[in-house]
Amino acid sequence: MRHLATADLGPGFTCGEGMACVAARSGERALYIAAEHAPADFVVLDVSDPRSPRLRASRQIPTGVRSNNLAVFGDLLAVTRQVAEPGSRPGGVEFFDLSDPFDPRPVGAFDASGGVSLGVHFVWLAADGHAYLASGAADVTPRDKRDRFFLRVLDVSSPAAAREVGRFILPGVASQDDAAPPPRPVERLAAALGVEVPDGALGQRRVELGGVTSWDFGFRVHNVTVQPEDPGRAYLAYTSAGAYILDISDRSRPTPVGHLEYGPPFSCSAHTFVPLHTSAFALLSDETLEDQAADQPMGAWVVDTRVAALPTIAGSLPLAWPTDGQLRGKGRFGPHNLHEYPPGQAAWRDTRLAFGAFFGLGLGVYDLTRPLQPREVGRFVPGDLGGGSGQLNDVYVDDRGIIYAADRRAGLCFVLELAG
Image 1 (tube, rainbow, N blue to C red):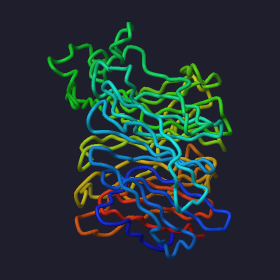
Image 2: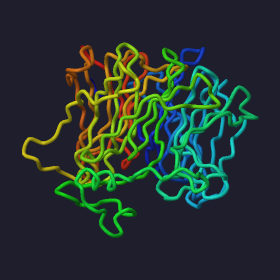
Image 3: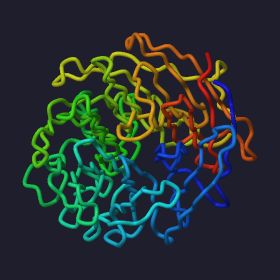
């Protein structure tokens, strides 16, 4: 890769985990980047000339709300609204018209507030005219507050009147559900070891048992991927519940086809689950959530999906761990977001190359010509940004091979170009 430019996204801006790019009829290109915290909402970056990115627009939101994620399909931009106070507004999704890509115009919103809902954490816009959300709802109260996000499917053919048409939530997660609660990670580990679950362990994030660390980051949907090459399937990263493949041929009744449950002994914080439409495999990244990689082993996995009912970890993307084992700098080190090859925008969609943002380990590029033998072909690690190592939170690649890597702490977007 060649480092072309570094864009400063403005005072106080911290990068979330949502980026999208559109190519205007004029030939200009707009890149949208979601913020992680208020008062910033999202920015619009002119990347027509990737060597000279320009900040063209910046929006703000009230304290207590975060945008965090966004998606584009055609002239429609969807931006999430996650709230700090359960049940409060404007938890949900806001929609914008991109007829002028540098001046997004609000055209509607979907309200996901009420009850104990935190609104919406993630949104995917698919070619089928639907939005797929990691969302709460007023009529769902989880038994465990860590489990607040589940799949909701919206018809967004009329953004001003977006409506829910289907949902999927793990049986037993909601207090309104008569089914038994699904076993927590520590319960699965204790059963495998043939021992009792320690008193008070069910509500703990970290439990040491039998020489293994059990992590519980919640049974919550994080990302949803629906690709036009396989429109009847949705790929869900469900954090500590693992990863699911759903049959969505009937959008009103998403139905599990396959379930990959891999933690413990792995830490299992399934974050981004992406099918590779040029092969019968998928990529799945965990999100490392603890400073200094305290929650290892986290991975960026290659998943064999040739039999959808039996998804299996078949390999992993090599990460650039220091050879001496010493992590330098503060913050997180390990997997986070992967480029998701989104349709309906100016995105890179050749799944023979993969791209990942790994916090303090930088940006990695991988050759997936042989999915079971992924090969790193590029690595970018920012230098000292005034507070230690960079914290690359998200990565997006456009159809020109221009790579955008967002730093969650410094509020910078690094612009790179595939070389060779």
